[in-house]
Image 1: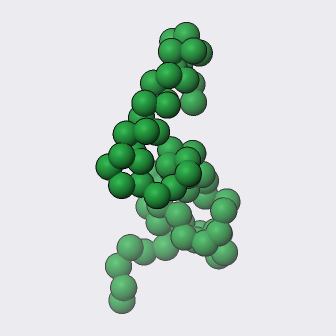
Image 2: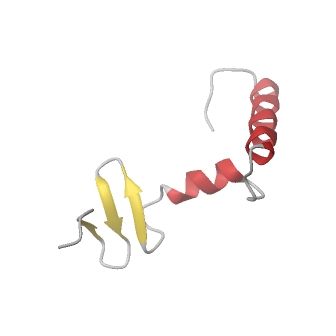
Length: 67
């Protein structure tokens, strides 16, 4: 995480968000950390990026549609 805010305040806000995510049903131990790793295109296999669906196994963007 990056912020111009005080680190302690950011940590408190993150703790509140983490608790909220768990309260509304997340079963992940670290829901927001999981989301941040999901965006890494180099972790196989399929990843959704700002440019589309990416296959880490084939190392190329793939169609969202089934032919």
